[in-house]
Length: 221
Ligand SMILES: [Ca+2]
Figure 1 (cartoon, rainbow, N blue to C red):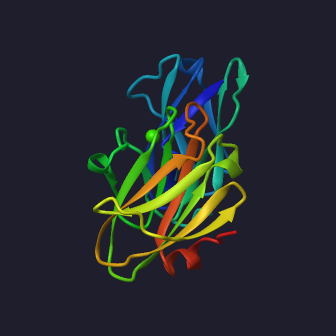
Figure 2: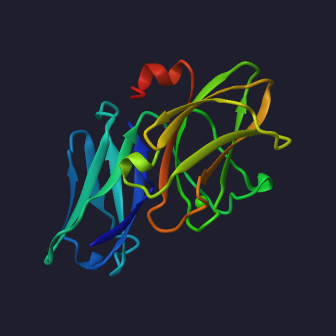
């Protein structure tokens, strides 16, 4: 039984250490990735696996298809449930808590795929980025569509904490936000749940990229 897999993804052409949590992980004999085209997954011996934690080194070829993959482990008890990770064109930035206040906003460089969660009720996650005057940036959140319990709200605020109006397009319960920087500077992307809920299963992933970069790389659905 697998519970979590972190980080939520890796860039094409890179390798990363992933941490799996679950049960019977000290008995894992094999790691399976579906589809494994362009992807290598190796069990790491250091640190040694414990019953509930395991480290896997995932290596992605530069030409690997950009897609979500499923990872399972094989133990004497059978084949586990799948955990998903994304092979994306951009670096994956894992949320680092605390990032709930303006002075804790987590800085990242565009373009990126942000991966985080609302771990508790009323959680708010802030991510800081730089934009130049007139720059257009698209933020697409992937949560409810993929089975997350989140009902996401995305907002952009400037360095003074003032809300910047954005173009919002609904994608089912998820959304696609187009931001145009009114002036050069730092901005914060804020994520929360529309009902103020959080906890296990409130995960999200956000593709954040300048236009037309994103439009040429990722079909926005
Ligand atoms: Ca959080």
